[in-house]
Image (tube, rainbow, N blue to C red):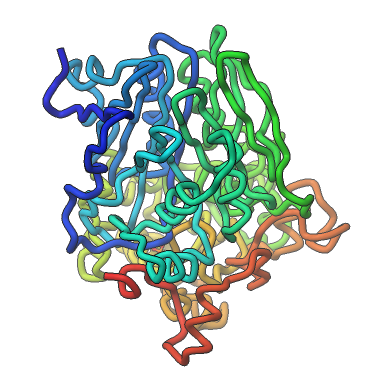
Amino acid sequence: MESQEVMTLLSESNETPLSARQSPDDEDHPKEKCGVFGIWGDGDASRKTALGLHALQHRGQEAAGIVSFDGRRFHAHRDMGQVSAIFGKEEVMIGLKGKGAIGHVRYSTTGGTAQRNIQPLFAELAIGGFCLAHNGNLTNAASVRDRLVEKGAIFQSTADTEVIVHLIARQHGKTMVERLMAALLQVEGAYSLVCMGNDCVIGVRDPLGVRPLVLGKHGKSYIVTSETCALDILGAEFIRDVEPGEAIVLNEEGLTSIKPFPASPHRFCVFEYIYFARPDSCLGNRSVYAARKQIGMELSRESPVAADAVIPVPDSGVPAALGYSEESGISFELGIIRNHYVGRTFIEPAQRIRDFGVKLKHNANRAIIEGRRVILVDDSIVRGTTSVKIVQMVRAAGAREVHMRIASPPTVYSCFYGIDTPERSELLASRMSEAQMAQYIGADSLAFISIDGLYRAMGLHGRNNLHPQFCDACLTGDYPIKLSDRNARRNQNTPDGQLSLLSEFA
Ligand code: AMP
């Protein structure tokens, strides 16, 4: 028996796609950090997908969804909130029948309750039902969308991902895979996609491989997912990264690899190592934890300072602080304690509430801090809100000196490839010199790792060794994929800054 909450989508029917039911006035943001998971040929496909999404929860806490396929029908369940709350209900899981499933976790710091954008998206195409989960951001979505709307297309969400669905619907290939590939040749941007039709799951990575996607195997079933931690939770075997520009098709015959795009230099997002991926994941043959620790060690070599304790800003500053401490010989101390029970959805984007959020999240450990010279290590400074609060808090707890060390170069540019960053004007490092920033956050000294130091820590000899091997646009302004929509807006003399699909189309 099916639960009422689980929508069953008849692939033969003309049932209205889910997104049509959803509120048209939600705020949304085009640049979402997300996690994806797909599995084919497994009797427990949706349960394994739910577990995989749980492991990917750090990639998105705002909403989650799963679509399964039972050989005849698609079943979907999507909701706002965290994976354990949405999929921890037996009545929901019972409804998600079938041996194929894909899932998505979604993050948006803009705080909109955008039900209509919860993925996986689903559409009835001429060739059958099709669902799609996307991590990344398309940089020509607005122009493709304009073109499609002019021809009569009716969009149901503000998500850039929906243009892919519309493009697939217009292709004429014999199989879903052919149609998907033909559609992807028309989009620009960063994408790791996991899709499902009525005979396969497909995982695809954009030609530059900006966002992660890995391949694994559990029993006889193959899995494509954002990070290896989603394989570990299942005890699944990690096979390899999906290569940039590669599509992996999982079906009854097993696994097929296709390379439909012209070869490009690979540009995996360096910020995945700095902040975003889980430290127990291994991406691009590198342990994320080991990379962060090495960055901390290099930071200590580049910017040493006499002090009594190295204190991480938890949790994301912990591996770099361990590296800094190991290299400097200064003891590592938990001088700031994080409250793990603060829901991220509670932290709304308005500055007023963000300020409050930081206080809710961290507390200074006076016993460690009082009367001491401390080095605070964090992974990055975005708007500077966290640093200001943390430095104030540590001083109030009696620190004699406060030195801030940041395990990334200054974040000076916005990301248009799937990591949510504010407009350039809100990035502290785009408005201030390092000395001004030190003064602003109230630290006795402030230092960031250099870009060459970052790459030395990653085992490369500087950024320009061979060619940039990573996308580091947020640090250097070197955008490896065309920003067609943004350039079009600039040419129309609209204000500089982030593209907003909502303002374009709502
Ligand atoms: P801020 O307070 O705006 O300077 O943000 C800096 C903090 O946010 C750091 O402690 C990071 O761990 C974290 N952070 C870095 N990048 C992001 C991002 N894209 N989204 C959310 N948090 C981030």
